[in-house]
Image 1 (cartoon, rainbow, N blue to C red):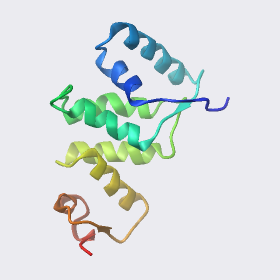
Image 2 (image 1 turned 90 degrees about the vertical axis):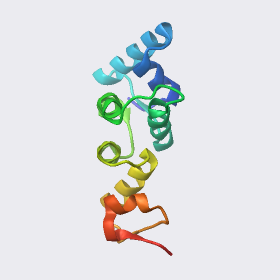
Image 3 (image 1 turned 30 degrees about the vertical axis):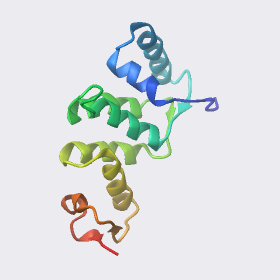
Image 4 (image 1 turned 90 degrees about the horizontal axis):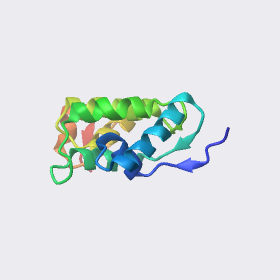
Length: 138
């Protein structure tokens, strides 16, 4: 069974927040099909980052980091959800919860870690807690 569809941010948001009961029910059914492997879909790093941003934003839902990981982690692991690197996204969620950094920075730190890179070039001192001496300024 080939991947035929792409999941956008709002599918995840409706599923997690249930703020629109009709759409939430439809998203729940989709997620269940993906869980059972009856259907395949994909999404992107930018969508996952936007999901975390929207769920965490005080302007939107203001969910705590650990709650976001609790919701998003199992969805990333769905049998029918095809992603380039589930390990990368799950590790980024761990870093996001453990450190006071944006999810995008957690993704960057995870890329550095998993690729075995020597350093991250950045002026963002938030990386220091995660990569230590591996943050360099150009």
